[in-house]
Length: 452
Image 1: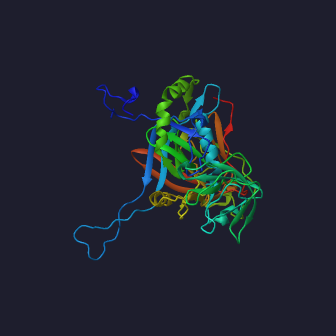
Image 2: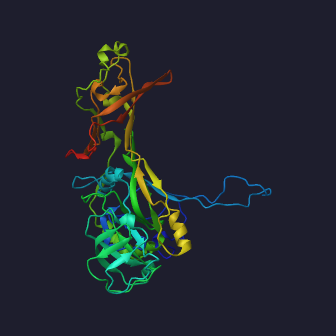
Image 3: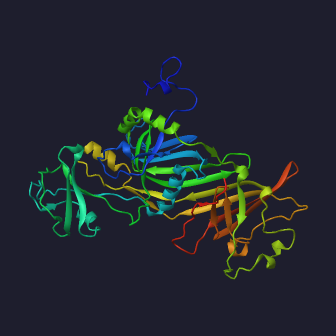
């Protein structure tokens, strides 16, 4: 990076000034393949990220946590643990001049909604030792991992690939999968010779029949190329005196730093694309409004607030916006890594490192919740509060109105938290809520309001 004028200090040395210089760009291609080739044309200028903070965690331990008999004062044992890659960044929510939120946030939010599906993984089968080489003209291939290919509807497309692209890649169509003999039958004879321990059969799974998949890739000049990315968390902490910023956590299956060179080689093109974009403005918390939704009639025999002694005094259900101090919104897919001996790479060292990375991520169930901190004056306004239970007994759910768009959560469960007062400050209360829906297919979508 030292040869880029943009990152040189005034003494023409690599700059270590306050802040950082980076470019973060999304590609909608997740690059499932273990030996992929990045195509810079996959980059879309609409998905250049504008983030205020970026943190990357490479969680892998080299320590052995227990002492062993025979060791001296200092330990002489180490152990290489599994690895997990997480990106966390803060993205100010911006409105483009034509009235839409920035495409990068819209895309990330849509990927979050699809994140409950978990990651998709390619099916890979090495040639079997029984019949190791596949010669030109072959119509069957024996592989060591036949189970992964049983999930596809016949016929399906696949490829014969090789480590480090040592041999010619070939597209094939598989018409039959025989579990007992671990044999794949091809629609047409192979066109090239393929060698054992170098080549393998590869096919990609499709998460569902739609085009809205949960995975993508991120290219960073500073860190490298993150592949197999999936959004785990999106959260907001809204106050009237601050800009609206989303904090986003992304999990990645792997990272490849060799493609940092692509960014430096195309640096001028990227800067020209950014300079031609239309103006935008950042949303501010002062525009935010908290609204109620229409309650349903399912009371679950819990009774109404009118029959509860807690609401016989000054308590009410309405929280006026002018009393709100802060509001939080936390959305999480609860993604957990899966570690297996999944690598089919023949080189031992490369295979070991690859197996230290997650094979996949699965969701333990999405959780959406929030917290409302508000001032409760005694006079002349009534105190606002909620009864523990569903939205139907609490005047409905909540709608977060950001101004240009809204997020509605009409089916929630409320949890009263605490009430605080002191002689030196205002009387404040906190209530919490979490989403509890009656439909498995319901999604909290961003709804444009036409106001900006």
